[in-house]
Image (tube, rainbow, N blue to C red; front, side, top):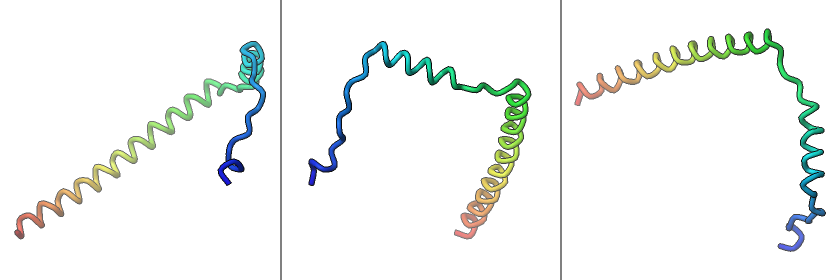
Amino acid sequence: MAEETQKKTSPRTSPGEFVRQVRSETSKVVWPTREETIRTAIFVGILVLILSLFFLGIDSAFGAIVRWLLTLA
């Protein structure tokens, strides 16, 4: 059973072939435009601001609840 689950070994790739494959793959990379980068950065900044305010509110609410519970004890 253990023999069936072992990975099959493929022939080794030479360093030269590896470099050719890497160059081939990196030539397929499409970089975002300046406008897309700016739009994404603004979107991320707005989401960080919204989420930080949300978690501040949740943390403050839980803190107030814990303080109230501690005054009862």
